[in-house]
Image 1: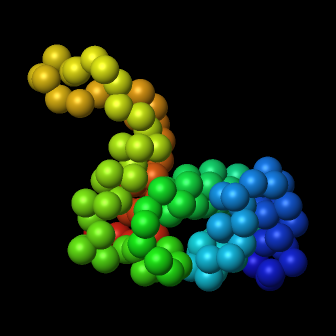
Image 2: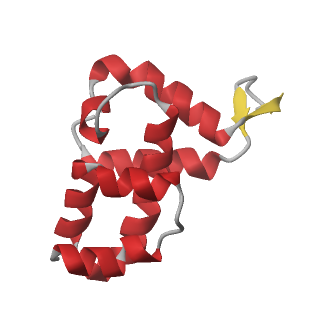
Length: 118
């Protein structure tokens, strides 16, 4: 997909917020969206927003590709917990319970698609 097609099918349909600015300024997220194609534009928008929000939670400098390293794994988990929110309730097994688990699931699905080696 060309840059103009990517902008009209993906970026221009996103809300004007920090996450969108983060997506447009990140080379890896933009390249990912352009390679996939317009038929998957809705999925690209969704996954890019989740990944941009996760990246904004992290204190790691640089682009999205700089955070995808094994040494940042704990920081990624902490940022995911912050995005999802931790409930005061525990699960039946006594584990932490996320208030919005769908955010974690979609974020990790995006990681797996972008970087299957993780």
